[in-house]
Image 1 (cartoon, rainbow, N blue to C red):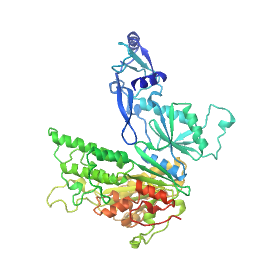
Image 2 (image 1 turned 60 degrees about the horizontal axis):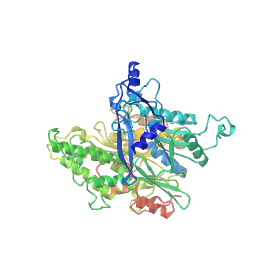
Image 3 (image 1 turned 30 degrees about the horizontal axis):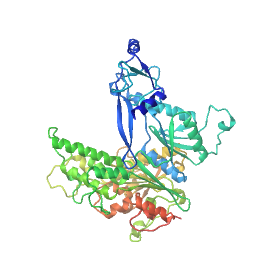
Image 4 (image 1 turned 90 degrees about the horizontal axis):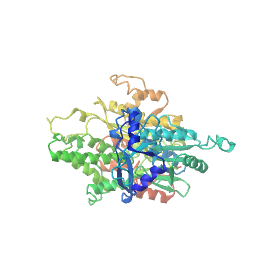
Length: 600
C-alpha cells in the first residue's frame, strides 16, 4: 500500500527530489527548513466496520512548520449536516436519488503558490530514498496547514468555471447549470434556461449531487472528471458514516431511510453491552434518577481511577454526540444532559451514560426518513386526531398538498430544573441546573432537517418566558434554512414558515407588540416578533401532548409518550420496509400507535 501511495504522488507530480546541496542553496535564498514527514498506515473498514483494505498515507508533520499562518489562512469550510439533510429532502421531493463522488488524493491536487516554498524530508524508512534526499513540493500534501484551504480554493474555482454558484449561507452547497466555458461551440454554451439545475454538496473530498435531468448529471460528471481526478460511485449508499437506503413505491414515489446502525452497534459492542436484554419499550432515561440530581465528582488529577473514568466517559459522550447530531434526534436531550459533566463525571454519571447505550441496543436500526409523496409524519401527527385522544385536536386542520414538502418547525421548553423532588431539602444545587431546556425540530418531506436540545443561558421567570426563548432558538435555525432554500431556488422561502408552540402566552406575545408583564425580556427575544412582521415565520398554537419538540426538553418519565413522539419523526429499518411494502403512502407506517391515515 505504501508503494501505491508513493506512485500516486509521482504520477500527480507532487514533488521533485532535491540533493543536499540543492536544499542548502534554497535555504540560503530564504526557504524554510525541511519539515519532517511520516507514513500513516490504517485499515479501511467496510460498511459494517469490518476490515476491508490496507491504506497508506504520506503526511507532513505540519505542526513543525515554522510559518505563522493565521486562522483565516488555514480555514476551509465543510458541508453542514443540516444542508446534507436538506439536499436529501430536495432530491426525494423531485423523486431523484442522490449521486456520490470522491476526489482521489484531493489535498495533493492543489498547487502550492510560488511564495509558499515548502521542503520536506521523505518518510523515515522509505526504501527508495537516498540518505540526503529532500522533496520540494509542487503540490500540497496531507498534513500541511494550508492544504485544506488550497483544495477548497481549487474545487471552488473549478465549479465556478463550470457555471456553478455557491450558497451565500453555506459555501459548500452549490447550484447551477454545468457547462464548458472553454468550448465556444453553440451546443455547449447555449444552456437552456428551462433546463433543471444541478444541486451539489461538498464535504472535503466527498460530494453528493443530483439534478432532475440525467443529461445534466452526466455533463457535470464529464466536465468535473476532465479537470480533477475523481471517482463517481453512483447512488449514495454510504456518506459520512451514514447509510442511505432508497426505496421505490408502487405508485412511483420515492423514500429514503438514513441511519448509523453500524456505528450504533459498534458502540454497543465496544462497551460490552451487546448481551443486554432487548427491550422494545426502552427509553434513554432511568426512572427516578434524573441526571442533574447526581452530584459531580471532585476533580483530582492524581486519582487514576477518576482520570480513567473521565476519559472513558468523554469518549462515550463523543460517540453518542456523533449519533445525536446526524441521524438520532432522540438522543439529543440525554446527550445534552450528560455532556454537562464531561469534566467531572461521577460513577453514577458513567452508569447513566451506559444506560443510554442499552437503549441504543434496542433501537440500533432507528434513523430518519424522507418521502416524496407524503406530508411530514409530524404534520399528520399534529393535524389528525388519534381515536383515543380527539379532544387534543380541537383546532386540527388537514395540511394542504402544497405544504407537504415545505419547512415546518416545532419548539418547546421545560420551565425550571429537571430535579423534581429528588434532591433532599437543604442540599446546595448549582444555579445552572435551574435553567430551562429549549428544544426544536424542523421538518421537511416527512423527516427532520434540523433539531437541537440546549440549556438556556439564564433562568426564566415564567414558562411563557422560557417558551419565547425556545421559539427564538428555533426561529434562528428556520431563518438559516430559509436562506439556504432561497439560494437553492426552493419555494419554502416564498411564504412564512409555520412554527408551532404549545404555550398560548408565547403565541399571543409573538403576534403582538405589547410588552406588559414581559418588559424585562432581552431585545434578542423580540426578534421573534420581527421575523413574524417580516413574514418569515408564522406562529401557531398546538396542544402540548402532540408537540414533538417536547421530547427535547426533559427527561421523560412517560415511556409511551416518549416513544410516540420519537416515532412521529423517526423510523426503524423494519418500519421503513413495511412502509414501502404497502406501496400506499401512509404516514402511519412509522408509528407504533397503530393509527392508519392515508394522505389524499
